[in-house]
Image (tube, rainbow, N blue to C red):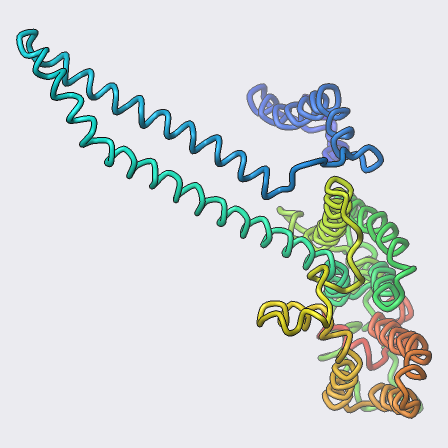
Length: 429
């Protein structure tokens, strides 16, 4: 609510602010237009949109296929173009006849038949050009349609990886207690498919909560300087303390002693955004966008299969109806087969190579734990036995990642207790 309000200070956070008449109208115009658009959409278009996107009542396409529909449409367009060409040629002939005198009418009529016989091959050439263009357009549209279906299928297979990667990246960029829920949900949702709907639903709700919290934290009466902690006043150096003799290092490097610490930053990454709040909300708006992106892809694919009466393709397969029997049919079927089943055949070996690479890059205590788990898995040797052990290995790896993130969060700043991971948190932030 925006009103012309006089004599009251510090009510700006409630929407009560003093404006002149022109500025007041400009401030009200944009939210009023947005509200009007929402009302019009809800009253006139929402029911039709819901009926079009209702997956319970999807009209099934009967008869002609997509290629036949495109061919019929292009044939109709080409026939229309041919008729216009013929009409244009007849009109040119009439204009030539009307331009001559009446005395030469009989001679022109006799010559017209000869001219039409001469111009008939030219007209046939134009009609032949139209036929070739329509056939070329049909091939281009078919290729575009196949490319579109390929892209949608590729996004359907890998949307989960994109969403999980984006959300975990946001959690690592803003290390806080509230973002810990995102990391836990999607670290376990990637290897366990049953947790994915729960992770998606909870992440959408929690991202909205985070956006609301960050917006409320911008209120003017919330002043971090009044409740920020200054741990340097409580720093007592004694001979028996574990940090004795290392005070200078703590005062320079530690998050707790460099400057006063805002507890809201540890809880949820809440900070003052000064004049523009969008950069502070960008990460969690990105999470909401990724979740909407994932739902849109899966609903589109489900609608496409219901509308065209198609069966659900095999899990992980990009190209349908491609088996090992098509390997000798050409180079393209061979490539399609390997695109479908390459990770199915060699995914386990690729996972082991990546795990060994991670252990070699880390070279710390957690890498040692990871290597022990990897040795246990490799000790099974047989592929079936490794498959039985694989869920436990994924659970161990996810738990290890969740525990390391918890160490990066560290203890609450109110305790003024320094641990080594607080220095790591400053680098992650």
